[in-house]
Image (cartoon, rainbow, N blue to C red; front, side):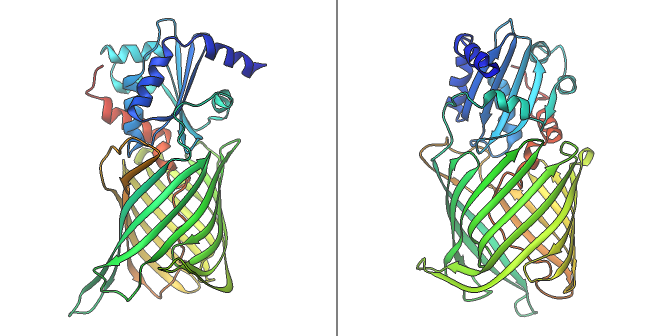
Length: 399
């Protein structure tokens, strides 16, 4: 009954609203829907145009139009068709900011940013989406770097990998992707080109901020099998529990796309937590369990986020020994991709590099990469990150 009332209002009260959908679709936003309930306007969108979610939200707010009889506005941000974060504010407070009566910091304090989206997500569940993101293909070109610190004659040996990738979101949370690895400038080994990753992944978002990611296929480190991860947020974004479980064997697709594998299964079982220090946009994480080499131990990590840049310090300690090092992730390519079409070519969005500073042995707490999912992308959707992003991007703007 309640959803029927919403659909009724959605059909008769959006004369002004259609301009929002038209403008957002023209800008390249996807999975668009809206409705009006009494004096409350609801909008949902997904960004696959801008590299950073803070940029996308700033554009959506700049394009937003609404009638004078509205008092409240709620926006639901999606990723791969799944709800991520909501933003709610009064229309008067936004009007006051646009007219210069208050600053962006004052507006941010009055607005609500939250990952508790169950209620608002239910309101959009039966609404038809405009410009759906599903069954479109992205041809992604990226680079990775492998290196070894050698002797005095050859102090640094490197291998630059060109990695074209084809990926498609088939439905809510469902991605099919394949990544091919082409070694160049290779001083490290004699490795041929091969399919470094080919997988089908499904992301789920359940009630009460519980997420599940399941992957099946070929992964990095020449692994073949199934891998899953579940996260449960307990205190908004500030604390979440994490459990990983995987069963894989040695296997990969060679340069002729022929399967190579053995029958020895390896099990990964870990559990831990991630604490978010919002003031400094820092994650403190700890995981304990069995890793790829069947070694038992823990991984401790501190990651500081600077918008799109991530810098981490880590300590891995298992019965194989201990390892200390750092890694970082930096954005690459343009901030704004081409509009999502049936087929789109774009660059990979980030470049990652790891450095092991001290190590007792190789293969300590080794893991493999199963591809992107909403859990390893979630930091861009954190309420505090979005708040700070809008302050930075809208501080000097007036509309």
